[in-house]
Length: 328
Image (tube, rainbow, N blue to C red; front, side):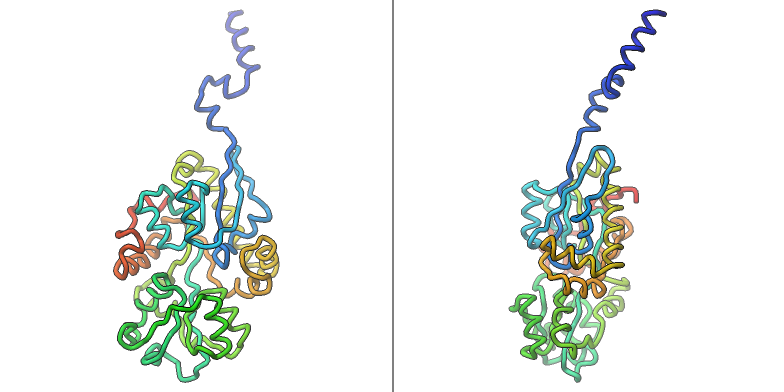
């Protein structure tokens, strides 16, 4: 009996991991920093609060945040293993996953924010685009495939009736549209807001989102998703869930206080000046949907990419495991 009591006294003096006698318990509490990438521009705005106030995560996990110039640079950082989580365009997330990169989608964080703008009063409906040149931001990306999906059912064939021009960079397209040097443009936020601030007479003759709903039955089209390294989802699921909760709250904060969010966007060099960011936030379509709940809308968009350019998503729809459930 005295030996048993002595043994218990020795065990009580040991650190918890050693007292339990398990290497697994010791490894489970090893400190870890999750490296998160946010795209410069409107896509990263929803995360900007976390740049300023890093979230408190459980299980000895912390998170660091950095702005990355564009989607191609972000993909390179993921391929090299320099980032553990990132915001990506929907089709790029699918393409990387289909190529074998073990990053899974955990949330949809941005829905449709592409607008058609013109100063031509004669353009009222899609059929009015016939025999016109339409400048489109993003060849082989969502703006192009969005038009190719919605216009045929709205009375305009994008191949036969319309000339789609892709040569102008987004910022230049916005500037030329505002100056009247081009007449019609399809632009994402914040470039649509930039153009309209420079020329308030520009208008949106019809809603591309409404046309998408008519064409697909989906209320909106997704544009950006949050992906996380699969091993983290498996091994640190509680911490990943806490990170997602913080991201969801950050999106809500930016929507509630665009002015404060705009100041942070400029401070942390996300590629926009504070007034433009603040003006673009209400016009943008930030959301937070868990991956399983967003799967139907994601697949509706990816099916469009698959039909138009299969290589743009890696030749197939991602398998069900792409849509990670983190318990939110």
